[in-house]
Length: 326
Image 1: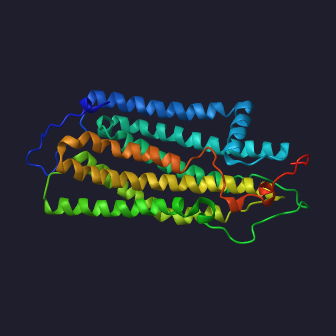
Image 2: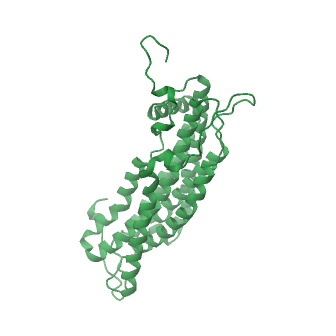
Image 3: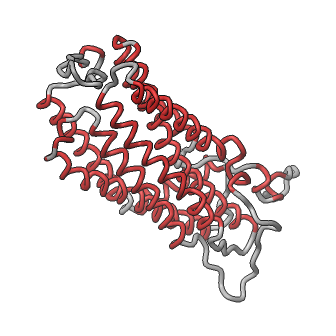
């Protein structure tokens, strides 16, 4: 931690790469990677264990209701929301746990002593696992199950991603992807002409996440359509709004995964060029991926957020007269 942990030693004078963006003692790097992997496994296991307590599940649903600014209306809706959030929480916890477990074998390879192990292995596994879990649970789980003879409501028109997330959050991943493509193209051009030496680890990370980003953005429209085409059984506008809330979260989760992949491809490409131009800035170059990932968590939160105004039931926007019933 801190700038003192960076060591720049050019041991490959005849090579086009110099491994000085982030170089740690192999023993220390292995211990750090083991600790990070254990932490991921513990977080995943803790998430699964916490969801076995009904009180925890209901409390989580109540916090979600406050952030989404949606009332329950009935105890049945509260129970359905709690059940739906539990299913999504279990899927997310299982994805985190699986990412940690799958990372363990890589600790016994050359990657185990690589300072960028967390990005190569853990983040890639978390992005893939989170995407699979999000799609699987949204295709499998239905929030409400109206009786066959119960009334049904639906939107008057087909909704798209922009209706749920807004234009800015819908387009942000594609903007990051375009930036990543441009940065990677510059990196390839610099490498091709041999104008400067490049950091081996960072350049390899840029390639890994460039491939991950391409795969993510090829799959993104398909996964969006799967979620948007899934049925929304609802008996009234409040149930439909709740279903829309969880659908918006799912679409946001897909964009979070794609955005992280694109940001990492961009950050490592820029970091490689930055370090090649000014080796003294290596520490700051290593911070780009992490701080960008943290910022994206606030753009696409998964613990509840208000729906876009047109998706709320009309009656929620009407004032209640003094002495009237809400």
